[in-house]
Length: 246
Image (cartoon, rainbow, N blue to C red; front, side):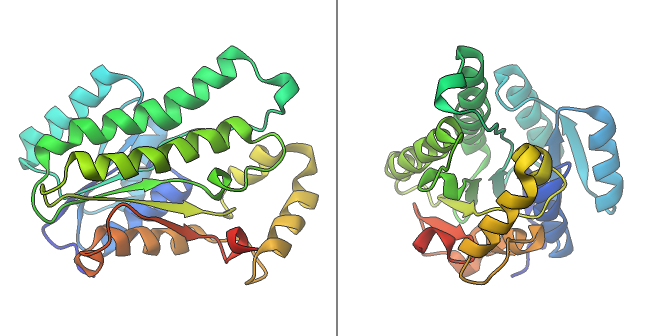
């Protein structure tokens, strides 16, 4: 799976799964542009990627930032071959504690941001290009406190199924990779005080007996974004050790 001479954007590419995806694509020869909200983290990630990686500071739910991102890509490269819509946010909030602010924050980050990232990328893309959206097994198994987060990811699945019909004949593919729990620096803070118990439970749900690693998700994304997946479109691929099937 070579990405030589391919131009790729990875949103939210400064850490965790996003950074691992950017590293995988760069290793395979892609010219990678990552986005992040914080300049210091963005600069550090670009330095980690090395080579010809580039960074654009942007908030994906801010349409002006999106316009600036794609204007940059147009001016620098004139096209886009792969968009990985990874940027998003999640919080554990039970039904009784859901607020309007939490609801809006989740849907802005995970649905609005992805929707307009995809829409505004299309003019730069053509035959053979691909879009991979990072979902979550929470779309089908949200678990306690993850109803809003899971709802945002389920919304993306429904939207992708509509989008592939909207752009039928364009030669652009759109798919979703939905990871299960992945061993990143942000996982324990996300799980909170019960992190140890939660991690043991999640590992036990996996038919492989452990949670995922960022590089495993990155390789899955690279596959769906490559020519090797040229006949796969509008699908949600679970990369979760089989947990969503149990």
